Image (cartoon, rainbow over all chains, first blue to last red; front, side, top):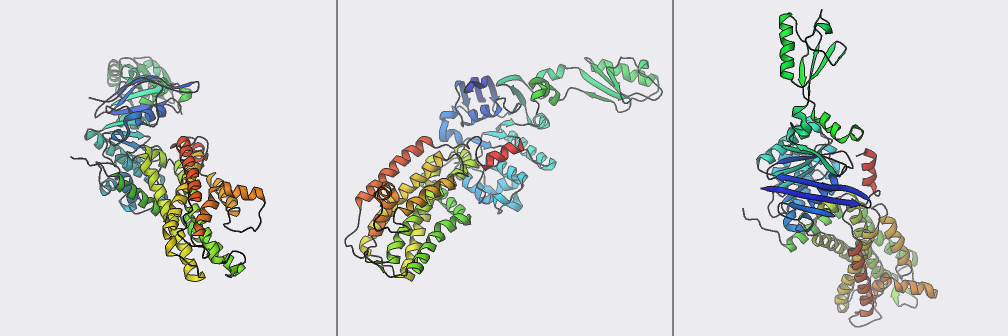
Length: 300
Length: 274
């Protein structure tokens, strides 16, 4: 079963084609991450899926609804976690969850949500007295208050400290475990790597790559990088493989067949009775692949 | 699991309740709506004395209390709805509401009902202080007219408030817009001053805006020289006309999303470089 089905989506603002023919399929129960630089069409795409904007061309189906026309039935089944906390600053945490929760026919109890996001001590504090991170956690709880089938998470952990981030990630993992579908937009590659089943990279209004975190952009076939310190008393010319570069006593080798290269290197080290200090083998990181896909000048 | 949708009435009641809470937790709004108009009554009676105004046959308080009550009711609806709604839009609250199953009309109704309730409270406080401390007379025969005039008047000013919220660029601009409209109009609508023989253009201008009609109809119900039920259908009809035009225009221009490049929130976001 598919949760989201998008074909040939187009949205123009004046002469700018903000979204220029996007196709997307998200399966039920999947954690799908949309990555892309600011202005790439990410937010526009998500807002069309949420029903906040209408598309100019193409077809969109979300949970079997056309989001622009789905109305109340559609909104009863989605949860939106906004990028910016937008709630009445004069109300308390409990009141906000009550007032927004009561509009859903199927809702999660306020106390349970407060516990889930770890705001027990702030439950009767006014929203305007919360720290930025606490407001984001309230935002996360608000996205889940209607027990949605599909959750839109827009930069859910921006401004979190590392432990709050881990906590938020485990909440998202739990949601995925309950069979919820999650559409995540994020700037953090480690977040996408950790949470997403699949990733699509969007640049200049088009999807430029799609895959799992491990295969995105041909990552699994890319050359691996082997790095180690030159053993004492040996020089580069002694090595069985020519290095790509050396700097500060560290050797870097890029190789399409890392298993073979490592075997040669470690055999050489054992035969010569030396240790390859600080040895590491790395695929290009998701961030490397991403920056290459969207062009470094857009990387910010 | 059987999922039961809450009734419209329950949702309106709940929205109204929370809007009321927000009002009471915003001291500046509570002050300007409930206390500020009362200060005029105290000042006017102190300055002019609470004697019978020559030519009108009523005391200072009997004349000014109903007009100031109307001014307070207009502040509660027109000013507060315009500012509150525009700020909520700047903060992204309206956009959030649009992303929930809450029908937009119920959200707006909750805001309006809350504003009308506050307006009623302001009227009761004004007239109550008048009766208790300034010998203002209230007549049973005109109570139905008082209620109907109040409801038509606040409906008109609530519609105008939503119109300002619809066309204001952001929440920062709305206090300027509402004050620059309501206050001068109040001066030519016999709310703060009574002019014996105003210039024709001023009289025409006063008659054009709905506030004078609200004040005249409401004041008539407290005029000891008059008799009868005091329903002034001409004034009520004129206010209803303003209200209908305002509703149509507000619905046409109303936006749920924060405007680009305006508002406190937007500027903060740009500064953060997000």
